[in-house]
Amino acid sequence: MDVLGVEALKGLRKGKDAARGARVMVVGTGVTGLACARALPKFGAETIVTDLKGGLSPADREIIARIEDAGAKYLPLSEAEGVAADALVLSPGIPTDDERLIELKTRAGAWMSEIELAYMLCEGRILAVTGTNGKTTTATLAGRILSDCFDDTRVAGNIGDAFIEAAAGSGPETVFVIEVSSYQLEGCFSFRPDVAIELNVQPDHLKRHGTMSAYAAVKARLLTRMTESGTAVLNADDMLVAAMAKGTRAGVLNYSVERELERGAFLRSGRMVLRMGGEEEIIGDAGEMKIKGPHNEGNAIAAAVAARAMGAPAENIRKALKDFEGLKHRIETVGFARGVECVNDSKATNPDSTRAALKMFAGRAVTLIMCGDDKGFDYGGLYADIEAAGAKVIVMGAGLARVADELEARGATGVARAADMASAARIGLEITPEGGALLLSPGSSSFDMYKNYEERGEDFRNEIRLAQ
Ligand code: ADP
Image (tube, rainbow, N blue to C red):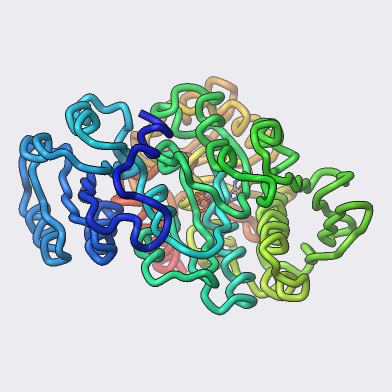
């Protein structure tokens, strides 16, 4: 089912009353499911939550209690299948083609993501950000700029608060910054931001999306419903993103950190220049920023251009860029031990994010700690960067053991293997010379050893603290 399904959605229009009286079935009892359970009853929707799990653990029962406290109802899948809902909301972790959804989808008027439903319910203007890497950094920056200019600025989506909760109480003056993942975009059909940023499309999530072109097509869904009054901010340095200009009616503003553009934003002697209709405006100064590296310059330019398109004056943009300290777990210096700078980049969960981190230590002795699940990534490009940088590598845990084998097969010597973070940190501090850097930039997700990337990053921080 696609757009037609949404148009057929009984009683749902755009605005805060769009779901009043509608029966909405939410699939998933994680962060998104709970947010829907809390928010939808307030919008007047009869809210039913179900999930695809078989049995219920004690933790599940606690969640069900929270769902019912919020005024929603929980039904096990077998019972939910007998209910005809006006709309089915799929949590992002649930593959949209999961066979266990067939019955629910057949009975429902339409299925969608929580972002799509929140869009129907919200009022105000929207700046949306997507991309494989840099979404949270860019959305945070855009949020800082816009909250300086507009009183009711709300940053939500994949970044923290769910969009559906942020949508409550919004009005025409509300400005949203919404971080959107590809999983959420799969269920977007009418979602139309006023300004959209496409940062990059790099290999990740291919188990779900199949191929890079299918993945890029999902990312491009952010732009397909936009009209001439909207602005698409596209990374001209990324081929797959640059090609998206053809698929949108929105006005396109490209940005590049590699070259000057006829129309769009670029760097000239460190300053961010926005050139439109032959006129140039300085909208920021990369040299003043605390966050570093070409990838962060790209993120910052994208946030700056998008904020400008939302109506932020250049002076607010420049100030917010200058003040931004960066985020935890993203190339975050956690301290120095034995003269070695220890850097936590636990959020680097794919090869390109690790490559971006490694670039920042060019010319310095660097030891890279890699770890995580084996998601089948091709690390060839990263290996070449490691060799060019003369970096040492420690592979922690069993998940990415093949990385050590593959590096050795390429002729690397001295690749270390560590069972846990304590030994990875100990070895790292032994083999990295004073003045060098010990960089945890795993290149894969954390679930082999941790609950999430934050826990992995905190483990690293703790080990460094102990070593100081
Ligand atoms: P996301 O929300 O898309 O995961 P984050 O801002 O949280 O993005 O950053 C995730 C990881 O990607 C961090 O390791 C960060 O240093 C790295 N990163 C940030 N921006 C980029 C970019 N534009 N290109 C490549 N890597 C990036």
